[in-house]
Image 1 (cartoon, rainbow, N blue to C red):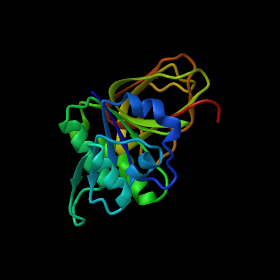
Image 2 (image 1 turned 180 degrees about the vertical axis):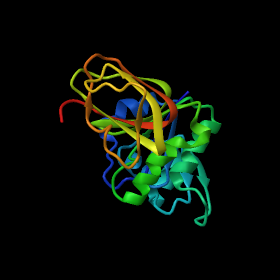
Image 3 (image 1 turned 90 degrees about the vertical axis):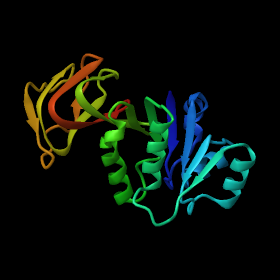
Length: 213
């Protein structure tokens, strides 16, 4: 099952993603992420969070159109996006695209990146997606699809990553170690798609920049 989650970003616009949103088996608005959907005339299957950022008119229209509204208390341990991710997993999603996850507040954006490592997501393919870039975790052997010349950065998450071997990238790594406080894995380039990366220990954030930068 393919789920798409729209997070609450002040700069997110739904228009460029209409085709992706229409294909989703499950479309979730994480609180204020529903405002961009509402502005585009799109109704999610589910709106979840404390709903302090979702416009009242959007909530009313979503409910009238048959959307499920799942309201949580404001005083909670999880962010609205974390709740949305857990709902997607509980519904059986094995592929999750998250839109509007990075942009605006730095604390929220950094937390959204770190949530890719949620243990509940270990069996899912999850990516943070924008119009010109995407980010996802590499655990073990991971393909890196793309076009020659596109930029790939490998960033260790949660500590050093070891036993890293790549194929199809301009700067090869073989049984290498990348440390979170060092910038060695930034700005590699796809030469032979699809590229691959394998990690023996730890996790890597793969950031893929589409096109030319």
